[in-house]
Image 1 (cartoon, helix red, strand yellow):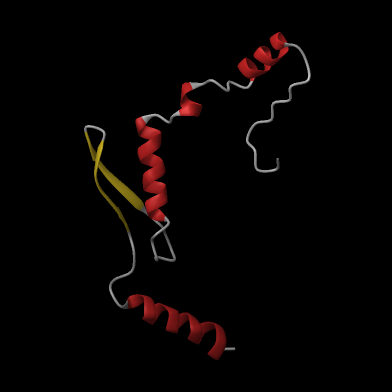
Image 2: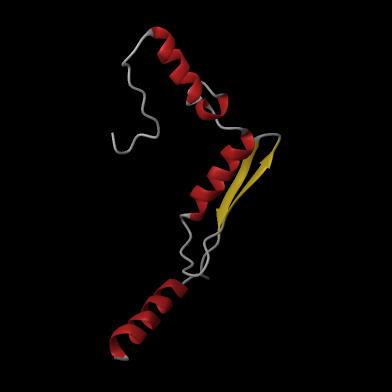
Amino acid sequence: MDSADVFLFNDGTRESIKEKIEKIKLTNRERLRPSWDNYFIQLAFLASKRSNCMKRRVGCVLVKDNIVIATGYNGTPRYYLFILSFYFYYIFFLNQ
């Protein structure tokens, strides 16, 4: 139960359950299915997780008529990941 967003306990009458459902907006359409804008924003956020840039993670989604054309994310130039990892190894371990 720790990971649940909403708690609903059936400890009363049918009317009290209906009131609780309305109070927590359980049947809200936005909760059941995100809007197109929120959907594409979440896709861009997920794409940014693939970035290997240590300073700033950026994701993008190209959309036309609610159809995803492409996704992308920033990163370091090709073969630089090894150089950056060696550089940080030098700074943290060899420079002490």
